Image (cartoon, rainbow, N blue to C red; front, side, top):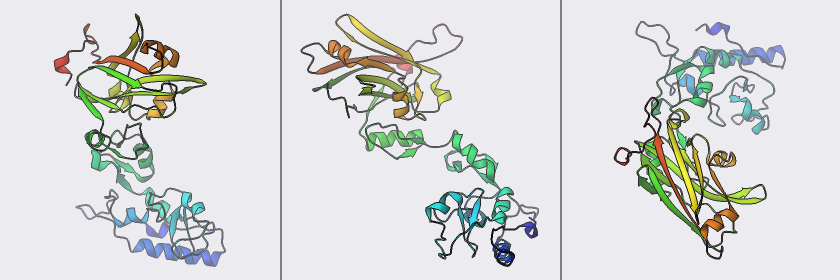
Length: 320
């Protein structure tokens, strides 16, 4: 790397600018980049090296991208944090001004780094400035907890989330590709906060989340049931599910593709992608004096097998 070509630019006068340049140049001159077997500098580095740490914002700990700012003493921070610290360096308390560190930006351009989800299985290497775009859609990025009853911040791979749902949220787990659930509420006119516990099904070697809840659709109170797939959207498209609710010789049915848990519970609900039951219809199905909700929701999940006429069949002993 040609360190003589590195420079920092500033809106202050030339003498101060020259001082900042030499401070930054000295800082980079002390770095030791890893070398390959033939002795040449290797720009593909592990994310725990000193260069990566230098590109980490000391305020938010995220990787810094242009414009990278610095104070007159050479302390850097990202553009997002510059406003958060009220234009004052947290290290030396000096005013930040409008100094941009082109030196650090040029160093970043020369680097290739592994995806931050390498510990989850992603083996890809990317130029520093391309890495963040890949990570936003990386197939190995962790999934968010699908539990809808609370704002849970836990994330991880599917086996980790299954254990988390069992141990921390006490979610009911079932095996098989058919289900028959009964939902009861003593005061069905209370729509707000009427969320029933999530149920998870294990079939075809995969996990599916069944949601059922009440909410306001405009001015109308409704109940909704829908299914989410614990995996990516491309895998979710391989499956279809049906839901049915009814009573007194009447029924409502729904058939569709499960949504991936990459889509939040609220996003799926607000898109109305599931079985929606108006409250009056739900009370009719419940019978009695309509003072208690008693709904039975049945359904099944099947795997699409293109090219096979019986591809939609659900074979119980193959589901678990």
